[in-house]
Length: 317
Image (tube, rainbow, N blue to C red; front, side, top):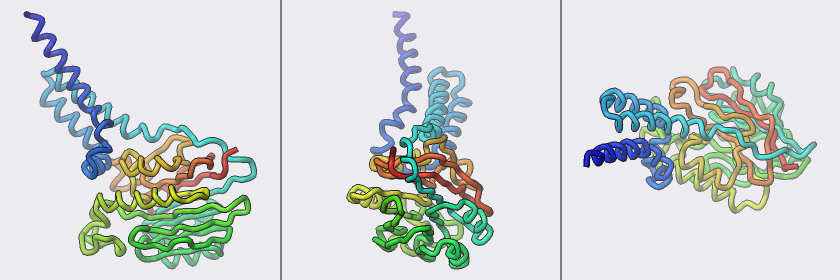
C-alpha cells in the first residue's frame, strides 16, 4: 500500500509533463482561440513556465509542467523554421522573386529594392512616390495605394486576373515569363490586431473598428487565397505580407496547397521593431507543388519593421 502514493505521484508528474504537448493536438480545433495563442506563443509559454516554476517549485508535477511548457514553446516557435526545401529549380528556368513591406521608409528603401535586381518585386505599404520610382526600372507594374496598399513590379508583361476586393487584399496576376506563364497572388493581408493609431483598414469588412480585421476575418481571407490556389490549374506563386505567423492555423491552411519557398534555408522572424519579441515570420513566399526554390535569403529594408525576402523559384528539375 505504501507504493500507491508513489505511483500516483509519478503518474501525476508524467501527466503534468505531457499536458502542454496537447497544444499540437488541439491547435487547429479551437478556431480563433488557438489563432490568437499562436501569435503570442513564445511570450505566453515563457511567462507560464516561469510563474508555474517559481510558485510550484517544491512540487515535481509543477516543475515538470513548467519545463514541458517551455519546451513546447521552443518546438512550436522554431519547428516551422527547419529547412526542408522544395527541390531544385530546373536549369535556366529560375525566376528571382522578392517581397518587402516598406513600412515608413517609402523612398529610403528604393535603392535597396532596386539593388535586388529581382525579376518580380512585390511591395506592401507602398505609396505613389515609391511606385513612380520603381516604375522607372519596371515598366510593367500594377499598384493599389489604398486598401491593401500593394505594388507589383515585373520585368515581363502582366495581366490582371483579379483586382483587390473584399475577398482579396491584393492582386491575382498572370506573369508572362519567357520560361512559361504563371499566376501570382500578391497580397497584403490585414493583420488581426489593433492599429497603433485607431485607424482602420479601408477595405476590411470591419470598417469603423480599431483593428484592421478580426481574427475570424483574417482566417476567411486566408481561406479565400487557398481556394484560389486550389482551383487554379496553372503554376501559382503566393507572396507578400500575409500577417500570418508560421506557427498558426492559417499558415497550415496555405501549406496544405503550397510549399514554403523560403525553407531551402533556415527560417527566421520577418517582423522586427516593437513586435520582435513575438518571433513571428509573417512575410511569405510560397509555390504550388511542381515548382521549387533555391538561394533564398532575407534582407533589411531601411526604416521598415519587416525584413524583406528573396528567392529563386521555378519549375522543378
